[in-house]
Each structure stands twice: as structure tokens, then as C-alpha cells.
Length: 312
Image (cartoon, rainbow, N blue to C red; front, side, top):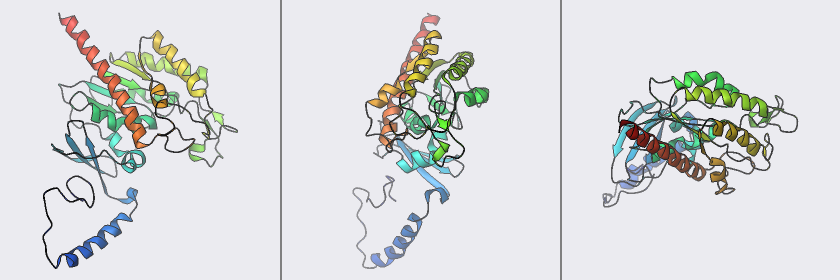
């Protein structure tokens, strides 16, 4: 693998030595590479993930099987692709690679959400390099009842003052599940039981917002992304119903709203990972991440402006 992280691509300007014994040297190396490529990604002891911001500042993170960052190297002047779909969507280790050291000169951002937020977290970090330290909770936030139960632990997972908290619950709440269903997640909208009713969701979200407001952070509610036709455990249109309930609560509490639902629709269905699946392709997560980063940036700017006015 070359310095750009792309296998088999020669570095520009560097020519291989013209040696008649080169094929003899390369043959065992090729055999080793073929053998390694056949090993499942989950069995590899280390996974290399590469991010790049628009200024081509590259951050290479080597992550072990526990998702803990063991090495970080910065480079400049290169043009390297983002994390692959395998690394982002299947392994998802990069999403949980929170900053090891807080930069006191940057605002602290906390992302809370389900697998959709796990998918776009890496791209939000990329877009906010130099603007904010972006953290996420160490797990999938699942449904609102689960979130309410664990919220205190997540808010206190680091001794940091949160400046912006971007959060969502919904897709798990509106999902029907049945213990005998063989579909992933035991989803079954025909025979299953709804995880959380609209009224239960309303009650949980009111309590969650009340707790989040105690942090004095700028809060951003992210609308639940679309439920596609053919989803095994979710009914078409329920995403809109739950979003309306959440929006009512957010408006009453003067919480900013990031309409990620409408933003996602701009690139659907081509960014669906597969038909009837609520998840997205890598391009889809980049699309969502850019919107989240934009909303977080706006909140940071407003917070800074308000602070200056208070000082004046």
C-alpha cells in the first residue's frame, strides 16, 4: 500500500528500480497480499482509517478491534479519499474515536443518536476540523426510553462543558419488533409490537430536553430521517408523525431544529444502502454529515456572537 493509502498506485515521480530479479522478489509478496485480502475485516487486528478536510490536512488513525485509537499521524498537501464504506458503515470504529485530548480553544460538540448518526459522525468531524472538538456517545442511542435511562452517563462521560449538543431519537421508537422474527433486529411491522407510542415518545422527549437544557449547551434537534417503502419493521409515514411531535416540543423549548429528514430526501433513493433500508451509502452519510456540520457551525457562530455581546 502506498503513502496515499491506495493499494497498487505508484507515488508520482518515483520509478521502480529496473532489476531483472524484481519479479522473483514480488512473487512471494503478491502471494502474501492475496492471502491477507481473504481474511475477513472483522478478524484483522488493526484497521487503518483516513480522513481529509478540504484543506487536505490528513489524519490517519489506526484503530484496534476495541475501536480505541492507538496512533495518529498528520500530513499536509495530499489528496486522500475518505474512509471506505466497509470501515464506516460495517466496522464503524471511526465514529467512536473521540478526541483523546480536549483543545481548550475549541468548542465541544456532542452528537447523540442511533446508527444514522454513527454513520455521519466521521464526516462531521472532518468538516469541523479546527472549528470544534466533536465527540459522540459511546454507543447507539436506540429509542428514547433507552436514551432517557442513559443520558446522565453520556453527558458526564467526560469532564467537559458541552457547547453544542446535536441529538435525535425516532427510528427505534417507531419500529415494530417481534421476538420470533428472523429479520435483522427482529423487525416485523405486521405481527410485531411498537417500541414506543407517540404519547410515550412525547413524554420521553420532554424529559430528555429538560435534562439537556441543564447543560447550558446550544441544543440542536435533528429530525428523524425518512422511512422508505418496504421497510420490514417501520410503517411509511410514521417518521413524519414522530417528527411533528418532536418539533412541537423543540419549538416550545426554543431548541434549534436541523431538518435532516428533508435534507436526506434531496438525495433519495440513490443514497439508500439498499431498497427498504433506513440506512445510507457512504455518499449518503457524507451528504447528511455536511448538513449536520453546517448547523453545528451556525450554532457555534451564534453562541460566540452572543458571548461577545454580553461582554460588551
